[in-house]
Length: 383
Image 1: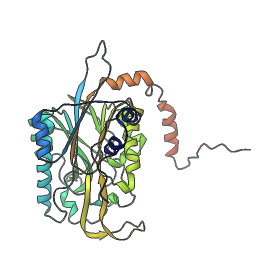
Image 2: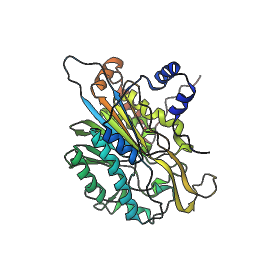
Image 3: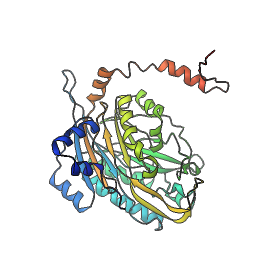
Image 4: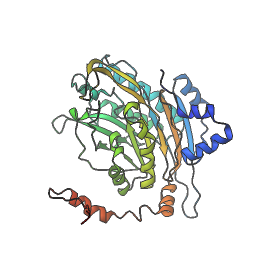
């Protein structure tokens, strides 16, 4: 059976138009206006064979503040070459593919662009093999991918978030799962790393890298304060919360996750984070099935296999009021553009008061106690 292209298509096919409008309101929170793109962008997306979608997330106008309009772009894609091809060829092919899509993002006036997790390589961490996959690791500050994207960022006046496999030559050639943040000027603003590393199913990532020591940095750009919660960190509410405490207005979640494991969670987690923390979230997932040369197992009872499973794409943007865009497809490369107004973040804080009623001090005390060796849970029993 072929993979389902998109849930939205099924709804459109079987639900009458008027009822569909109400169904979409219940599913997505509110109906967004479609963005209109120039004909050149539409034609380029069609000729390069990737999906192009766009939505406008508006909010009420204010008396004292002007709208703070930002366009975010999310790229999801398959690997271009087979995993058996030479490493340099695989990287170059992906550079070329992303440049094609990034150029269209520039035509759509995207201000902040983010790719999927470890976008320069197949997600080979299921194999537990060090050779040849560690060769994809490169410097975050001046590696070939960063240099390539610095030119793209300056060309389009665009902030770019580039999740890569990092080789830290300063600290013993260690490897990290890292996102590099490049300014619209082409300069590297900084980097962040994956805070939570999975040990579930075929996600054998701790064979290659460990948890970040960089905390929860928020990067101040001309297009707002942004943060990056890499992949598995989306399962940890405290992780999302920390970016909000540090002032993030948009949090990107570049991911690589498969349908057999996480798809029921996917549409919920980034949306929940947007609600709980009064900021925008951008959930990005790769697409396709990646086949590796050698069979592997993961101690979960499954027979030896050569693929991770289907990466189901479905990238979307969620707003602090709980609404969200429809997703990109489950099977196809795509660029999702969302025009957002950052003023909505404060408006939602004023309406719901989640930050005002957060009570960090009571959780501070609990977390501090829970970290102690002699911690005792607060459980009350019948006498």
